[in-house]
Length: 250
Length: 277
Ligand SMILES: Nc1ncnc2c1ncn2[C@@H]1O[C@H](COP(=O)(O)OP(=O)(O)O)[C@@H](O)[C@H]1O
Ligand SMILES: [Mg+2]
Image 1 (cartoon, each protein chain N blue to C red):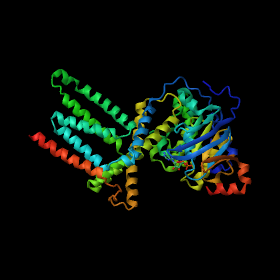
Image 2: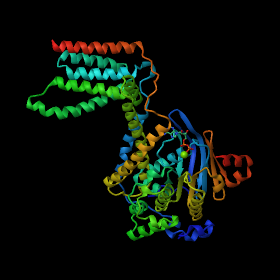
Image 3: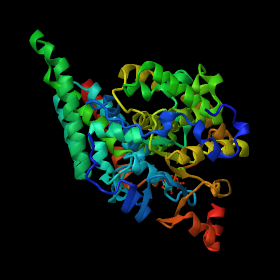
Image 4: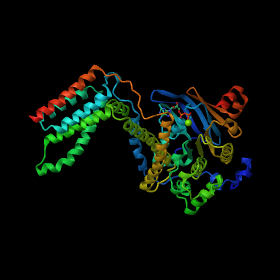
C-alpha cells in the first residue's frame, strides 16, 4: 500500500503546518511552520522546555496537537497512523531514539533487542543475523551480543538502542538528546556515525545542545523559543552573529 | 564495516563501510496485519495516571475539608454494614443522594454509571442465592449504597486530599510517608510503562510475536526499574532533608464541615441506639 504515490513532491519529508500545542492551560508551541527535506541533517535547538521533545511526540502521534497538521511524504501523519498497515510502514521509515534509553530496551539479550524489529519484517533468518551483526559492528558492540541490555552502562545502552533502530533501516532517524551524559569522545563517536548515516542518505533530526560539536554536520537548524520554531540553514546561522550567539548558548 | 573507530576520523571516507542494506531504501510493505492488542491498554494507563496527578475535580468553593469527606465515607460504610433496619438504610440512601446532587453534573453521571456497572456485576454473582431462596433485597440495596459512597469518594477527592485527611486524622507520619511514596512510585512507574509501550510501538513494524511474551518482557523491565526507582526516590527525599514529617497543609475547616461532622457523630449514635432497642 502506498498513500504517497500521487504527491509529486516526495522530497519534502515532514511538513509542519500552523501547528499549535499546549498542555492543559500551558501553551507550548504556537502556529509553527517548517519543512524538513529528504537528506537533511536538522538540529533542533532551543531552551529547556522549549517544546522540542513535545514536537517529536506529536510527529509520532503520541500527543495530539490542538490545531494544525503534520505531513509525512505529503500525507497527514494521522492518516499514516490510523491504518494498521501504514502505521507499521511509518514506524519502519521513521526511527526514533528516545531521551530515556531505559524504556526502550526490553529484550533479554542485546542480540534479541536488535533483532526485534527485523524479525517482524519477513527477512530470512540468516539475513537477520547479518543485519544484527552489521549493527553491532557500527558501534563496536560485538562483545556485548549476549549481555542483558538492562545491565549495560548508559552509553552502551544508548548505542544498543540506536543499533535496534538502525536494524529497521529507517529513512528518517529522530534523536532526542542522544549526546547527553556522554564523554566528549563518546559524543564524537556517535556524531561520526550520524554523519555517516546522513552521508548515505538518511535524514537525521536531532535534538541537541552541543552546537560546537554538531556545527560541521548539521545542514539545517530549527530554533525553538517563545512558543515558536524557525528553520534556518547552516549558512544563515553561521553568517548571523546574533543567531550564532543564541545557538551557542543553548 | 566499521570495526575500529579510532582510525576513522573523517566520516565521509568511511561511508563505503556502511552495510549495503542500510544504504538502500527498505521498500517495506507489511502484509495485512491485525491491529496490535498490546496498546489497547494505553488508554487505561493514561486515565489512571491523570487520576493520580489530578487535583480534586470538585471546585474549590463547593468543597468540604478532605477530612470531612473521609469521615463521611467511614461513617456511611459503618452504618450500612452495622444496621439491619430498612428505614436506616433508606435514610442513608437519601443523604447520599443529597450529597450527590451537590456535585457537578458530569461527575454525577460518571459516578452513577460506574456504580451501576459494578452493581450489575455484583447482582450477577448474587443471582444463585435467588434460586436458593436466600435472596435478600436489603443486602443488594446496601451493596449499592456502599458502592455509591465509595465511588463518590474516589471520584470527588484526589490522592492529595486523601493524604491531607490522613495527616489531620493523626495517622502516624511514617504510614503517610509509605503511602505517599507508594503513590509517587505508582505515578512514575505508570509514566515509564506508558513510554515503554510507545517505544515498543515504534519498533512494531509487522506482526509482533506473542503478546504474552512481550508483556512479560515489559513487566520484567518495569520491575527492575521499580527497584531502582524506590532507592532513588528515598535518597531524593532524604537529600531534601525529609525527616518523615509532613508540614501542616493549609485547608480551612468551614462551618459546613463542622455541621456535617456533628451530623455524622449523631447519626452513628442514633443508629447504635436504634439497633440495640
Ligand atoms: N506531560 C506534561 N504535562 C504538562 N507539561 C508538560 C508535559 N511534558 C512537558 N511539559 C512542559 O512542556 C514544555 C515543553 O517540554 P518539552 O517538549 O519536554 O521541552 P524540551 O524537550 O524542548 O526541553 C515544558 O515547559 C514542560 O514543562
Ligand atoms: Mg526534551
